[in-house]
Image 1 (cartoon, helix red, strand yellow):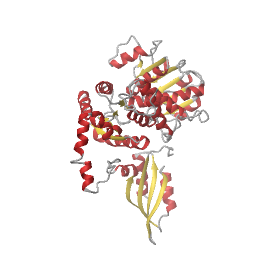
Image 2 (image 1 turned 60 degrees about the vertical axis):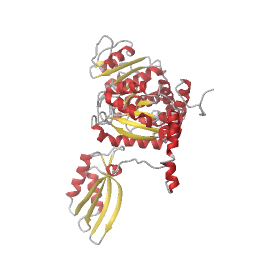
Image 3 (image 1 turned 30 degrees about the vertical axis):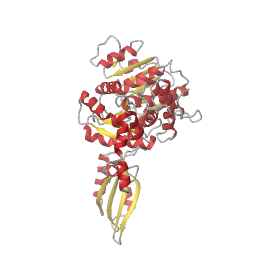
Length: 475
């Protein structure tokens, strides 16, 4: 069993083995034959007869971990003492904490940060609510809000189970852009209730990041909150995906020498992300894009139960094509998948135009196996970290919110998203650009700052920035 380079699970096995019965080499061979890959070894104790070691092993998943451990348990002379999952260990007690910026060491300190001194600050904010931006954490804080109904590839797992994902998102906000983000997981699926709760907590935050809320409720929740709040509201599953997709496509088109206004795009999965991707591509200049879902190409003349599909049909598919994915992909320059594994075939790719571009972003299993598609595509991108050209929202949301907070934007509009996409694309220089490098790494420290600058500039150009004293304000 081969372990892919992107294996996502490590286990640490503490075992004791009798030296006269088995050697470490025998144990390593046993683990290898079970398909495990040893990535770390620590000696815990050793005597004349026994050795205790912690062996960290890379495995595919939980079932594979069980196989490796069971194989060791059946090995003569080996006793498995304990098995720990390094990912679970990392989550013990949660991954984030609240830290004080100012130590409280004296009564005087206490009187300034709390009563009675704090009363003067409260009064100042009561007289001028805008001072909350300078005198509280509001200026740098984002609420990461979810109801746990569309978590990663797990679906509706509920608010408690969604917390680890939202904590991780908060960590990324902080590390990549210095934004203090906090997970807010709501125990309700009621659209109106979610809207009212977010509105009620909004005074404490400078922005709202909606996350992992299922469609179609996510559309109404975002739209209503954007209308009723004066701080940025951004559904990352929709717009983060769209921004990074566009960034990758801009660079991919440079490689194949095609203009964005001339290409034919076929997109599968007309849900939250798919609709957002479509709208940003249209805004960027794509004229011919066809959305395909389980029932085939979305076209005018068909009345859909989903009202968003009826709207979608009016703004896409200019030739009003119908039929299956295989029918409409003929002659397409670009395939974009935000749908399901295995729905794109080699024959589909072979029917596309010359130098096809394929963005197969279903996670964890793409619409087509990248290795299967490789001989037939010019540029290939996925949502996975173990293949080149990962389309990852992490490239987008930290810099977008950093910029929006810094200029105190009232919203994140289409122009700001387009600017963010162009900024991400610009991080890859012409010298670096290649079929396997169209999008920068999530660890590239230039990304967040360049996105921030572009977003601020676009915010001032479109009149949604409120802060006056910032270096990026346009004359």
